Image (cartoon, rainbow, N blue to C red; front, side):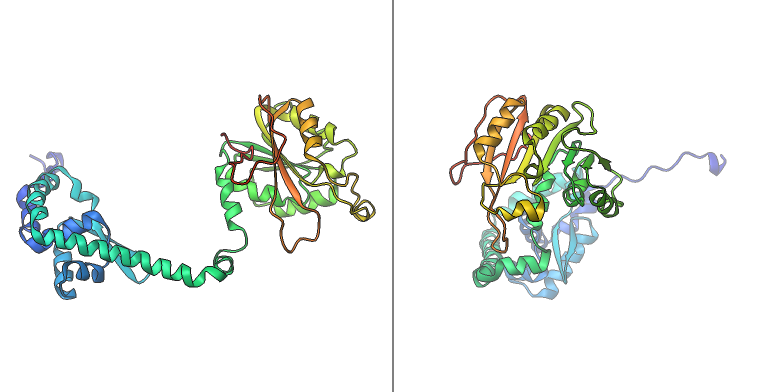
Length: 344
């Protein structure tokens, strides 16, 4: 028969005899039993089994070569664990037979107790660090990960298929933060200077669409958005309720509105310096306007004051298009608060 036409030789099945050598040694079985509970370094395994490093390393090599265990790097360390391949039918049958006897031995009970001590030591080291760093933990985190990375991470709660409108987008700071987490962002502003800055800032995000338009007459179709955001823009509007009406129009049924605004204040100079029309808003104003425009389930909450901020304190209000229950109030401390950006 021509070799080219010969049927392929099937891969040999793994025999139980191929697995016997690795688990024929009681020390290797103790290692497997410990690694079944938790992944550990060589030094930790030495402490648990009370064996020298050379002995542990030799037995680990046998187990690794036969596919019983694997390892992953973590910095300068290697953490050993039971390999996924050790769960195949042959290995599983063999390990069930051996495990019952190994687990019943006094040495296994000692190993378990020492393992608990090793894991407790890990926690103690972590707790000691936090105890020593508590006073400067905020600074440590900022140096390692940047300012307010936690707030950016919360954007992962958004529906990835959502279409979000950044209404009054300015230079595109909010749109830029939203873009990685949602299907599409529509950034709307009436200022050509702001739009030019936004286009430069958002050029790398193909899922961001920038449109010129008035908030009182949005360049969007009815029901085009899943989420609409009005961030510090209503106080610039002569008719804030009209803007809320437009936001309601472009929201789909069940869509969410998010408003960030200032509490009432007496900075009269803001009118001349920054063109503010309104000196903040009360909760009652926002709730009443939303209700009249079919935006219900209104919830409001003050935002924590930034010690470095020089302006008035802010609040966030959320509402649902077609929602049922409205709550125009500040929730008591500790009460869960829905932002209106994700499904409850």
